[in-house]
Length: 318
Image (cartoon, rainbow, N blue to C red):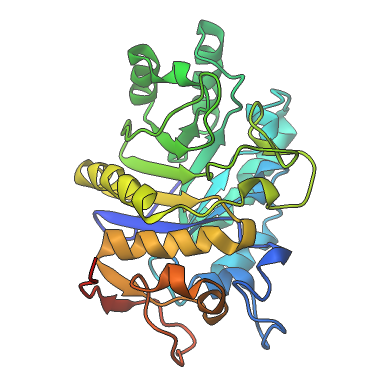
C-alpha cells in the first residue's frame, strides 16, 4: 500500500482520540460553531491523532474519508490507528474481520494520511516462544502497513524480544504508564524507521482502567487517565524524544491522558519543547489551563480558521 511521510525528520505530536464529551467547554467551544468537527478543530493546533475507535471494531470507511476531509488544511497532519482488540486481546478473528479491518484503514492509506498502525497488547502478553510466534503472525497479517507495537510487560525489553521487533520491522512504542509488577518502564527504543511514544499518565487506576488488559472497563470515561505531566516529567521525555529524533525520520508522540483535556495541554507543551516554538492553543484550553500553558503557547488572540504554526520560542526566566 502506498505511504507518504510528512517530511524527513518529522516529529508529530498529538492525542489519543478526540471524540470526548468531557472536552466540550475545556478544549472545544460550546456551542459548536457552524461546520464544527472535533478532529478538524484539533488539526489547527496539533499534527497527529491516534484513532481509538478502531480498537473496538473495524472502521466504517466513510468515517476516515470524512476525517481526511476535515484535516485537509494541515498538510503535515497524520493519523495513527489501533488494530482491533480481536487481534491483540481476544485472538479471535476470521477472514471477514481481516478484510473489514483493511477496508477501514484503506481511505487513510489512499489519502497519504496514515502514519502507522498500532498493536496494543495487554500486560498479560509476556515474551514467550508462543507469544513471539503470534506476534510474528500478526506482523505478517499486517505486512502492508508501517506497524508499531505497545508491550506493557517488561519481558519484552530482553535482547531477544527487541531483536524480534527489529527483524520484522516493527516499531517499539515507548510508553509512560503507572508502574506495577513487571510493567514496562519508560524507554527510548528504536526498532524500525518509526519512533513512537505514548503517554498514559501516572495515576494509579481505580475503576476506570485495568492495568492487566490496558483498556477501559467501567467508570466515567477519562477518569483513569486524569493526569497532568509536570514540567520536570515532560523535560525527561523530551530527552527521550530527542534521542529518537536523532535516528528516526518519523517520530509520533501521543498523549493518552485525556481526562479534563490534559492530553491536549501536555501535547502543546511538548510541541513547544521539541519544536522550540510557541504553538497556538485552543482559547477554551487557555481559559482553563492558563498558568500551565504560560511560557509554552502563544497568548490568547483572535486566530484565523486554519492557523497551525506558532511563534519561535521566547526565553522564559527560570
